[in-house]
Image 1 (spheres, one colour):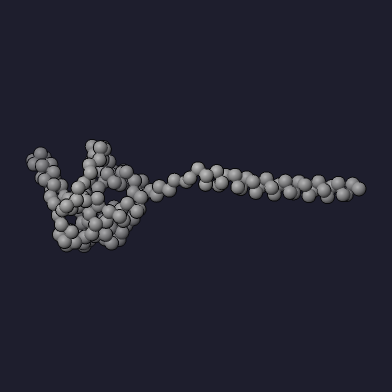
Image 2 (image 1 turned 30 degrees about the vertical axis):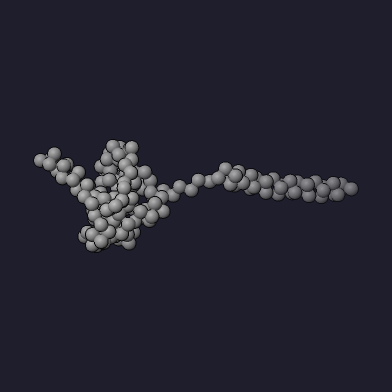
Length: 162
């Protein structure tokens, strides 16, 4: 019986859908969308989504690839897509990740961990020049301030002696 359900799951993932078919699934009781050519049924994930179900409902029934990528989801969130995949978008070629095996573990462990903070990460690398400026400009300002105070006090002190 377990092998039969696994085979059924594999067959479901091989199904091909068109955008008009996907557009019919845009309610809280039946929510589908497309990310990178994969058709996802995220109905069960609506309440668990870290950004709330409203975010997913805005994308329901559409190709949400750009929205998903613009958010900057973590690798764990990207791998979680496989758990909710029900098929592919017609005419779309999906590139399989080398880490597909590890993604199954991540997807199955998601419910247990409930760590939602790992799913939305903005990756804004700071250029080396900006990091240099962020450190040295305040240092230069502080040094200038204390140098000025030292020199003005020394001048006041020497004028008081004369």
